[in-house]
Amino acid sequence: MFSENKKARKEASSPSKEQNKISQGTTFKGDIQAQGGFRVEGTLEGTLITTGKVVIGKSGIIKGEMKCENADVEGSFSGKLKVNSALLLKSTAQIDGEVITGKLSIEPGADFNATCAMKSSVKNLNDDKRSKEKQGKTA
Image (tube, rainbow, N blue to C red):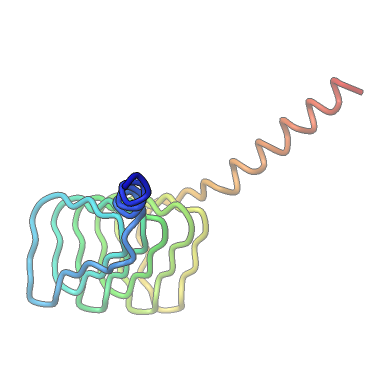
């Protein structure tokens, strides 16, 4: 009896492996929060927040704000984009706005008209500097 409840709670709290999709020809206006991956082939005007990967297909358009773990962009994004790990811009990508990411890869041909901050590298350097300072004080 108790083991069944634990299993149900564990499944409910784990991120979904399912992929959500906004199909081509669909326009969605509003905010979306998701646990799994997300593929956008249509248009999203608003905010998309997910713990998974976001793929913006060639026909995909996002205008607004997006926060995710990883992202591949073939279509268009305009607004504020925060990617915790890796952002890959394909040759057909068009990005306008503000980008914050850990890693950035841009294929030749992509339009990248944005301010960009690479956060993970800065954090690691500061952590290394602090650890060296602590080692110097203890020696």
